[in-house]
Amino acid sequence: MFDPWYWVVFGVGLLLSGWAAWRVRRTFTHYSRYTTRSGMTGAQVAERILRDHGIYDVRVERVAGELTDHYDPNARVLRLSEPVHDARTMAAVGVAAHEVGHAIQHAKGYAPLKFRSAWVPIASLGGSISMIVLILAVMLGGVATATGSTLAIVGVGLFATTTVFTLVTLPVEFDASKRAMLTLEGGGYMTHTELDGARSVLNAAAMTYVAAFVTSLLQLLYWAQLLGLFGGRGEE
Image (cartoon, rainbow, N blue to C red; front, top):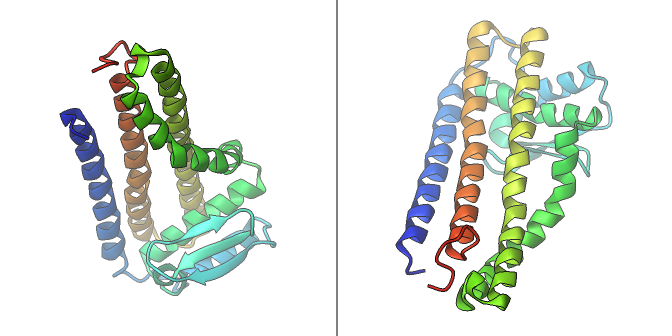
């Protein structure tokens, strides 16, 4: 906790995450001012895209909150936040189409999505106990001692499970956005100007996942270096 490099890594991660969150909220708010020509709500667009792709076993539900939209592959439910489910804006339609993109991935057996879903319990377990193991490894001298070395490897490995999760999330999210834009354009849901607005919202949202991966990777490298796995200071 007294290592200045810890605060550098922590600070960079905090700034990246804060900037990404600010950008997506700012962009979403901006394009929530513009109603699409079709006049369809996010929920209506989602249901129509699902039908266009022959998906009839996925429900569309309203969920409380803002930017809480997600697709639940286990329950086969597409949950849209109130500002998306009920709104008729560029932002709402873009986000709704993106979440449908995940449902399409699921229906088509998209490999990265299957891997991410299977990896969730592993990352959850690794993330919940990694810090305990890492701190113990530091207290025992890292690679400078046999026990510390073992704990260092185990701790970094456990933390890496969360980094892997943030990494595999990138292709899943980018692909969902790509499917969304192709569907919105090909299905005539939006004009070219409206498509640009939806694309801006999805691009901003994608940066939150990039920021999460970069933050996790920096923290992983920090712990590996601190514990001497890169030939660093180990026993200091």
